Image (cartoon, rainbow, N blue to C red; front, side):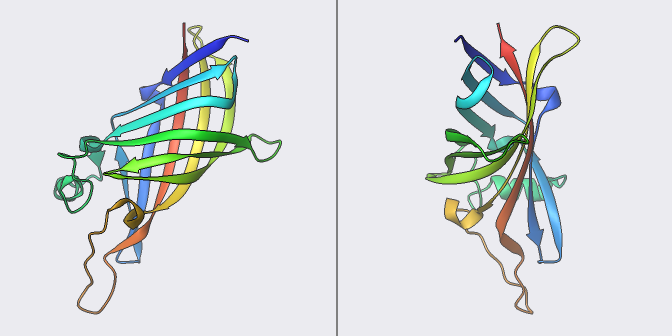
Length: 178
């Protein structure tokens, strides 16, 4: 078996999140700068080493004021904690149709917790330029307060401004390195 190294294809990958605002609609955001480094035996991802980092300063919700607030000490504290990190501990097949469960340690600010993400493995193909690529759709949920993102405001009618649950949705395409 040959060890293979894989890195992110940034032009074909996305890291998004959604969170309820006022409990009536979702606000979407993304991290525009992120890295994934993966090592596998051949093209078998079941025992892969996976390391992900996102640059907190690359957060984008299409609102400059909100982005600034998210980077502040009220939320991510980007000056003190410039990266979000995820290190996989297990990649396990759930059924025969390409569904997997990815378990790993997520670090936000100074807190690290184990999380589980649902993964749809799209497969491995050669692109028209001879590059070997692997594709994944990743979804999950975390509680932001578990990671020290505890800012809260209640409206004058007693409503919650920002929910605790954050939904994660990623499209990841990896390129095998020669």
